[in-house]
Image 1 (tube, helix red, strand yellow):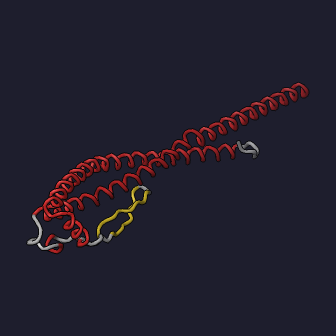
Image 2: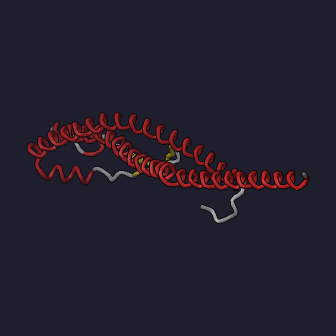
Length: 208
């Protein structure tokens, strides 16, 4: 509780602080609800993309095994050398005060004709490249949704901590301070009325 003299001005100041804190809490609660809604929508999409990505991984494993079986380890190694490293671009996004990056390839995935001579390899190499290209599309959405959800979860955690601090710490302290000031001022007013009545009564007796 403040050490300043207990006055009505101080009581009004505490009431204003309580009102501002409650408004801030309402804003944070709306932010919490919006974040939860955003996360719910993205989690649904993330589950779908995760399933698609795992299915793509299964196809890649199958086509890789067939290509390795029919064309040998050397062909896989040559294919790995032929595929250029991806250049990754980054973009910053913002949602409800939460900043998070998204990533996307800066170049297109090369076609089979750019990577090898079809006359020298089996169709399974072509299948492997196609499966890799399809998985690549899903992979970026999978990564970006994962990054976004992690950022939103972090923002939600901070928001919940601030709401909890207001509910459990700041507001109770201010409410208690308001009760003490109100009690003190009521007692002071009661004593002043008592003194005033006593003085008037004595004056009446003396005045006869």
